[in-house]
Image (cartoon, rainbow over all chains, first blue to last red; front, side):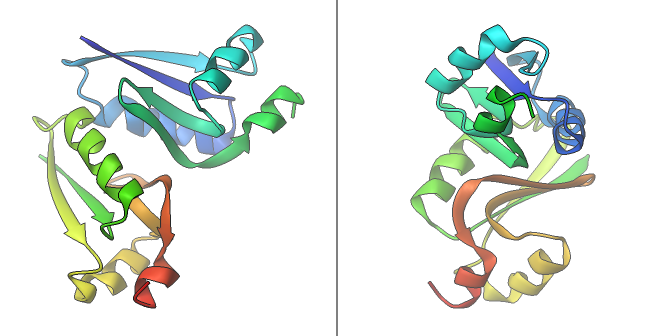
Length: 80
Length: 80
């Protein structure tokens, strides 16, 4: 199984994207973890190091998909 | 089968995203069509009407995923 991590911050754009990612991702091949960076702030550093610049974003083995635009990571860090 | 349309314009960001979408999308449930808006300009109007603002983008039944940022649709229309 490949790993996929969906990072979000609870914003409306994030929630809508999460439903679509859950539906569209091949969960027979990808194990999906959903991380709420607002609720689990200890994961923000990891997200930054992975190249996440805004949420919602999907991290796959091969790179980052920034999906639409909910909030910048700077906003999430600032507690917005 | 649900329909998914991946719109791109041949840009490097587009090509990288295409490979990842092809890999991650559940192709047992989604039928994926890939549209190169630079090569098939007659599809630009359809993309606009679907809410595509930039490429690469993935259109699902439920809405549009703008994935990262390669080029605005205005740039594609302008032939950039």
